[in-house]
Every structure is written in structure tokens, then in C-alpha cells.
Amino acid sequence: MTAATITLLILAGAAVLFVTEYIPLAVTAMSVAVALFLTGVLDAKTAFSGLMDNNVILFAGMFVVGAALFETGVASKIGNSVVKVAGKSERKLLIAIMVVAAGLSSVLSNTGTTAVLMPVTIAIAASAGYNRSKLLMPLALAAGLGGIITLIGTPPNLLVKAALEGAKLGTFGFFEFAWIGIPLTIAGIIYVVFFGIKLIPDRVVDMEEVEKAISAEVGVQKTVSPMKQNVSIIVLLAAVVGMIFEKQLGVPLHVTAVMGALALVITGVLSDKQAYRAIDWTTIFLFAGMLPLATALAKTGAGKMIADVVIGFIGKDASPYVITAGLFLLSCGLTQFMSNTASTALLAPIGIAIAKGLGADPSAVLMAVAVAASCAFATPVGTPPNTLVFGPGGYKFMDYVKVGIPLILVCFVVSVIIIPIVWPFF
Image (cartoon, rainbow, N blue to C red; front, side, top):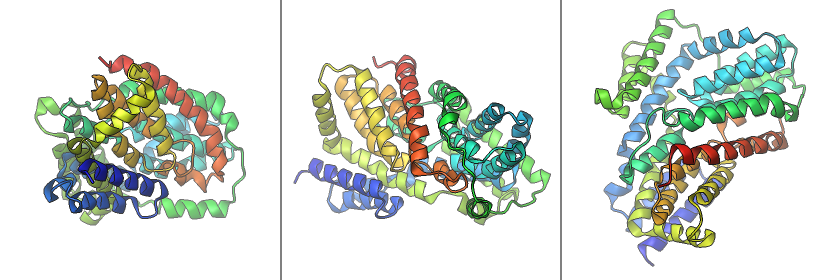
């Protein structure tokens, strides 16, 4: 059996396990690294190189920086002050909630953003006389859309950046994702406010169940000194500025993230235990375990084999637009039932191989894969924000299908139009 065949079998096995989640995602990813070594496809150093990747360090650092805003209550205060300005108009409330959620999730965890804003949104719904089911789903959708805007907004963005750099084909800048992220967010808000809201159920939810769900997911808010709140804001702003001016300052993104995390612990804003807890280790190990698979796909020629099959199926003369649209739909389909990080990790190296086969710049293809992976709107398990509001909103599986599929189509159309313009194929 050739190394390419072994790599493809490992890829197929990983895909099945990611979709079924028969074993935890992080365990699957690290099993891929082990399998690549045991089968002789990669040596030990290469198989576990993902644990030393700069992006893994960046992930860890920004998890800590983002957590500080939640731990100190800053994110909650931002949500309260901005959302209350909207008054009791349903459309104004929707716009306010979605803008705040999208803005916060562009630089913070979309899961954390949803968790913090959920009790705020429920309180606003109660005071305005609306059932919370009308407002909680828009909150989750906006958090997902907002994550697309910046490099650190969601793991898929970092993954495609790493894939592009790993193939020595360039990189994506910190705010480069905003070219597609902002139009998608605006289009998403317009859709929800004028059309989607009619599809969202107006359902009364049992208060006791809501309180249980909130306490389980959000926890009890603690009183924190204004000094700690101010420091957490300064550190976040400094980290973002440092990442924007990475080239001018000569400080890599991952170093900036670590500096921010260290500053928060040294100043006492977070304890070392809080910093450890802030890191989403599933994301860390998922990324670290799947990164060597991309190396194996390139090294063994397995990636080229997949690319040849896809190109052969679509046709050698197929437009890059058609291929990008196809990969968007594939990535979007996968992400409804599996981690957006996992679906991006699987498709990024394949997208690069296909782009190379066409002699096209892979930037557009990778951007389509990353954006589509963030469009997990059609199921309650597609993304953590969807899952967070599922119980408190009293939603059913089909509620997400009815609201999410039209939103996905909106994102698809916007992406197919904008991505090739900003990132030309040739």
C-alpha cells in the first residue's frame, strides 16, 4: 500500500469520526498524527509539529486575552449599555443585539460572546414584552457572522492563513477577512431583520428551564474592580493594534498574543488557573493534530490525487468560480454537523491542491472554504452559539433549518460575488 493511499484512508477515517463524533474531536485529531507516524507516512517530529506551530500559540494566547473581558464583566457591560439604547422596537432591538454580538465576536470568542450576551438578551426581551425565542437565535447567528471579520474572530480564518503560509503561497492579513466578513454581516443582519424574523418561532419558554440553561452555560457573574476591567480593555486593544501593525513592529502575531496573556496574569486580572481554563484545548489539539495531515497530503501526492478527481469530475475547463462555489457548498455542508475547525482543516489542503492544478491563486479558494465553514446556521449543533441558545430559546431542530438555509444562500451569493473580486484567481 502506497503512502498516498494510507494518507487517504487516514483522511477518510478522520472525516467519519469528525462527523459522528464517536470519540472526542481532539482525540480524533491527535490520533491522525499518531497514525501518520505509525504507518511511516511521517517521522515523529513532523507528525507532531502541529504542537509547535505558531498558530497554536496564537490560539492559546488569544483565548486568554478574550477570556479577560468575560471574567471582568466588560463584555457584559458593553452589551447592556448598547442594547438598551434600542428601546422596545423589535427591529431596533434585533439590529442592536446583532451589531453588538458581531462586533464583540470579531475579536473575541463567538461562543463567549453568545454566553455573555444571552442573559442580557433574555432580560431585554422580557422588559420589551417579547418572547426570548425571537431574539436569541439572531444573537447566535450574528456571533457566527461577526467571527468572519478578523483573523482572530474564528479558528477557520487562522487555519487558512496557516495553510497558505505552509504552502509558501503568501498569507492573509489581520483585517483582510473584513472585505468579505463585513458585507456578509450586513447582509445577514438585513436578512434576519426583514425576512428571517418571520421564520423564527414566537415561542413561550419555561422560565425554570431557562434559568438552568443559563446557569449551566454562563455561570455566576462576579463583581470585579474597575482597574481590572480597564486593564483587560487596554491589553485587548494593545494586542489588536500589535497584530494590525505586525510587519511594522516586527513582532509576530503569536508573540503579541502571548505578551497579552502574560500581562493579564502578571497584573492580576486573571489568575494562572483562570488563564489555563480559558484555553479551549479541544481547538488546540484539533488544530495541532490535523496540521500534519496537510503535510502528508502534499508530501505523498494524496492531495493532488483528490484534486485531480475533483477537477476531472467538474471538468478541466471548469471556471475557478465553479470550483470555488463547489468547495463553498462542500465546506458549508460539512460544517452543519461537524466542527468548523475540523471541516476547514480537512478542506484547506485539498483547496490548495485544486487551485495549483488550475494554476490559480489559492487565496480565493481558501477564503471560500473558511467563510463557508463559519456559515453553520442550519443546525443546532453546527456551532457552539447555536447550541447555547437552543434550550433557553425553546427551539427545535427544524427552526434552525428554516431560518439557517436561506441565510446560507444569502452568504453563498455574497461570497461568490465578492471573493473573486477581492482575491482574483489569476
